[in-house]
Length: 572
Image (tube, rainbow, N blue to C red; front, side, top):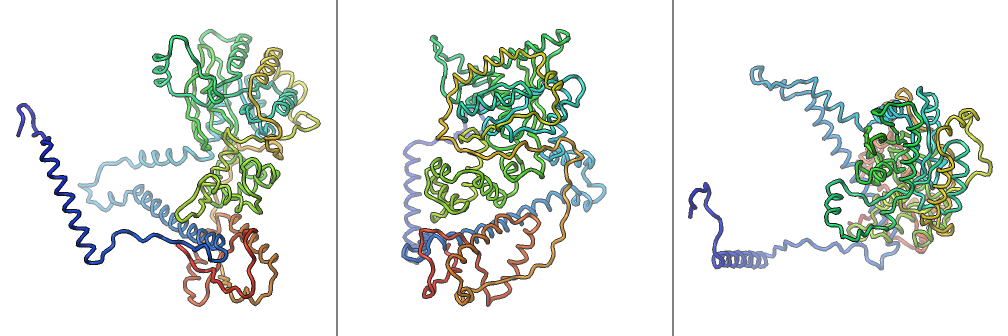
């Protein structure tokens, strides 16, 4: 029935009609199921039983199957990305518009389209990040170099400090130690004493649980009259009031007009806590912050007070000449490099730590290599796929997030002799400390150390630092991506019968397998195409079977000469 003054009729029906319709639908579905049962059609997919428990070397077989599946998925993903790039390229060229008649050709400004695509593509590039970082340095009166208290020396960038000292305008540099609640107090006090011989140092603990402005205002409206505040570890913020007082006091010493604001730049490597520092000083979530590296891509200005303005910057681009440990913790290319880059980063980090401390920290069994560690770690965290196969990529990403995020407790030893850097003379150090209330800063650090909850030295992992990390600040220093010519690759297929006749010992076989695994993880990007060529050539030869090496579990029995189990079988 069409209601008056309404264009459409109402779709509401009575309950009796609705229930009749539902009953008819149920009966229809029941009839279809009966007919399918008579015909013998089973719509339910059969459950994958997997590898039986009685099969020898079950875990080894599952690992081999998982590695083969991951390789197939990588090839599919590459083809998918290639198709996407091809589509984008066709759109940019405007092939459809060129094929159309001149009268019906759409009016599109090709120059504007190219600029738009270029802007999107260059936003996260190294050159764009370096340009934005230089903007922050040029526009700032004071530079806050944010250092992770777990490895302050490793998060220092000599190129950045030299660039600040060379800039005109008498710029000041101040060290801010973040994540101080993840380091033992004795170690933190020694680092503050060592670093303050060069620049002023402030201990800072950022607040993690910060909402945006609307949520914050809504909470303030419904807050109780007694004013109960959240004093949890994540919501506590230490050192913010002292930092604002120091900046206000330094602005008073400058000859600035009342309208001029003190511009403070916040710089540092990715995931060191720059955006969290800005949010803690502002009191709400003004900048995006998270575990993922490189969230901030452009300069952001945040007004803290009438006289102080903070400039948030993207992370410093790490130089490829750095040691692998520094690149694993501070490079933006680890997450974008695929599974091989992530696995290599995990292997590098595990080498720098004591194995017993890692076992106690993650509460896992003893392991022989990084792949076995990730397998145990994935089972502990529940990173499992269909059939109980561990998800190595998810486990490796979670492990790296523990190290770069504010979760894992680890510390580095303070050097016995804290000598200043070669580019810092006594006159430069005195000039950098001039204008700051150092006594007030020292008292504030002592008060922060008393108020913060720090872990014990026994529950913290001892990490071997590799010294300051080099960064790329100039666009000219960034290496260009060069195309690499891939030579022809000859396939080498090893059959299982040849392995039996070779007469190798069990220890030699395990060493060869581990070396093969390291070759898989350390394979550069240039050889990915060579891998595809190798796979296609293997498919052409039906008589040979390529067996991928896999890690051997020490708890499993070793293979004997009587064992004729075929490990090339792929269980899916």
